[in-house]
Image (cartoon, rainbow, N blue to C red):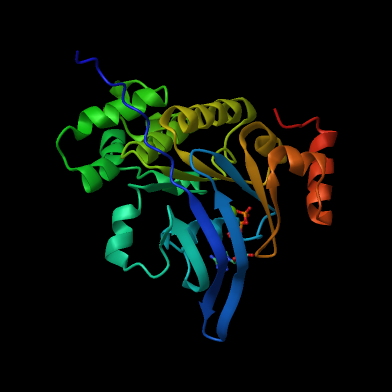
Length: 272
Ligand SMILES: Nc1ncnc2c1ncn2[C@@H]1O[C@H](COP(=O)(O)OP(=O)(O)OP(=O)(O)O)[C@@H](O)[C@H]1O
Ligand SMILES: [Mg+2]
């Protein structure tokens, strides 16, 4: 008997960051921006990274894929993807992981899509780079369907889309090559509230359906309560507290976390 074996979703990658320090290179010397950062994204779960503006959340995300927008470098620490350290990895090796095993949705939504490239070409870019041209258009259409967009959009251009549709396209492009870890840096910050809720629902659903691990960067504890299994709280380039989401809300330890949680609870947020 040859019963069809259901395709099991790929196991989400585990990300462990240990003792990570990053410095921005200046003519006057190195300026530290991250110090001794420890962070964990368990396989197929959602971890949130929260903290105020300038805390170092984006820098942490950039460090994982070594995509710093400024002249910065890792001065200490390990970044383990399923146990493999990315820090000493040569650029050529890391390039194979970027976008393939680890995808990222960047914080600046305006600059993320190229205005003169069709949606199809942009969603296909990662597919073609990592998996080849064959079947790329079908795979791109499948990715669009997963984010609730019609395949007709393949022929369109970014200016023809709403902000919410553009964010869905970015998510489609990120998931199309089949990453096992998705890093989403403030994925809803530029959207209005109703669209925000839809995009968060979508990200949560994709994380579960595809069995991905998700590192969700936000300054919004309401989003954390809704989405995250565990939380890392960042302040001044350091992690000041890490906890299971329920534990963090029920018994925040660090004074900064306490103030964040109290603020969120005044707005009625509590983990589901
Ligand atoms: N382009 C840059 N030039 C110089 N310094 C920078 C730059 N980007 C970040 N930094 C430094 O790195 C620190 C951390 O910035 P980062 O962008 O990671 O913060 P963030 O937590 O993502 O903030 P936000 O919530 O505003 O996105 C900043 O406080 C700043 O000192
Ligand atoms: Mg940021």
